[in-house]
Amino acid sequence: MNWDIIWAEIVTYFTTTLGLQLLQVLGILIVAFAVHWILQFVIRRVVIQIVTGVKRTQKVEDTRALNVSPVAAVRVVQRTRTLGSVLTNIVNVLVVIIAGLLILQVMAPSILGSFALLTAAIGAGLGFGAQNIVKDILNGLFMVMEDQLGVGDIVDTGFASGVVETVGIRITQIRDVNGTLWFVRNGEILRVGNMSQGWARVIIDLPIPYSSDVEAIQSEMLRVATALASSRKWRSIILEKPEIWGLESISAEALVTRLAVKVRVSAKWDFARDLRLHLKLALDSLGVSLTPLNSVVMTGSDDGSDATPPTNPVDIAAVAAAAEP
Image (cartoon, rainbow, N blue to C red):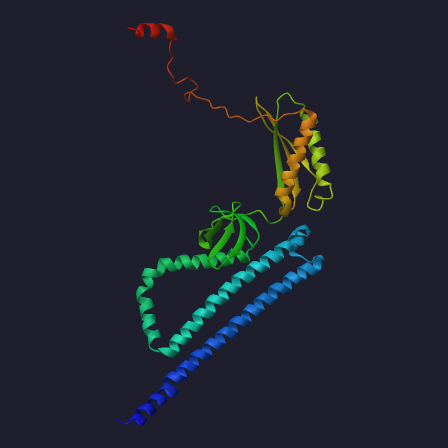
């Protein structure tokens, strides 16, 4: 056995066949990493430029300061960051899939044909599952492009309510008020209630006793709300003057009067809590106590007559005496 010949054949094989394949795979990986880095850099750069431009226009240094800026500026920042997140996920998936297919083509050129035949064979069985995946991806893209929701928005999707933390190509992550992180498939979101777009309204319903002086209480409520809205703490988030909308309901238990204030979304809940506290103190100074709203349940048949047959009163003492031995 001529070891020189065998060794020469092994070296020739690795340098001509496997070596070239390894070099091609290495080249594909290098190109994939380079393309991935360039696309990620471009996406991050565009997002940073847009956010920086908005900050510069609004003359703020911190993104959180945009809460007191016009609503359009806040939406531009949120939408830009959401689109950047979605595009980043798409780039990651596409680069991995394309690089994997190219490597597979180099290592085993014939396997792609078999893979295509296999895909055609099982395509019918996986069709419904693929439809759901495509539905999730398309719905996620449309939600972002149509500005239905964005990172940082407070939304109600039916399945979960809370703050949007991530909008992926298939899953949207929502953190509720208890801290639970919900993973909602984009294709399952049929409606989106966005509480972070445009403006919000603080609604306060106060049940007061029936015998109260309604006009005096409403005047005091409006005075307190107007004074609070004009304070240095809250005047930047108030969009319109507070309004008394009048009596919402009248019953034997209470009169329910409604106060409304149009505010910026970012401070709706904080302002509502402060307003309730000041209204409570004002009502205490007037000596007005709120009336609990109890439910009155009516029983009887549909035609208004009592469905329970009448009974005669029972003498409990006589029954007890008769029962004694």
